[in-house]
Image (tube, rainbow, N blue to C red; front, side, top):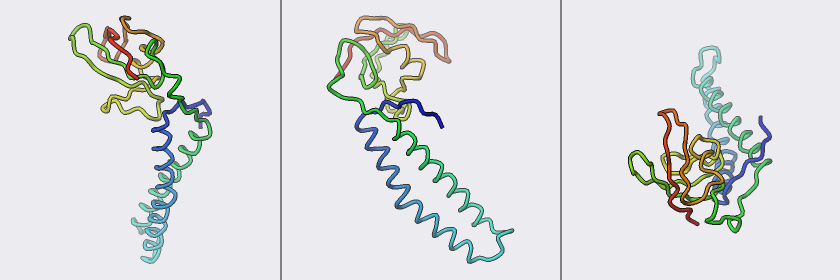
Length: 158
């Protein structure tokens, strides 16, 4: 497990805490019940229901441990620290792809909250990392898997 500090928005913290609560209170009980039912089928050597339930249990316990570890090393982003002069974690940024003129709006978030399809990109991703510490008007060159992309930062939104 890594122990680096995770920066997270207040909303992201609430999501993690509610996922943890769901896993501990609901999913654990469901798995325990599945295991109990599977055990009632008898012979464990040919009991695929039991094997499946135990695998599912291991996955859930792993996720619980992962979330608990993240929560130990979390720093909640203070929304009042956000400004519109420079991009940092938590910033919402409107950028323009210089080659296509397409405009995108991204929110730069910690890796635990990343949802690229939802416009939430990690500060550790190539685009997120490149945008950090820049200001409106800057043109940022980003090395992406698809090649080099130049983004003009149009504005930083609150």
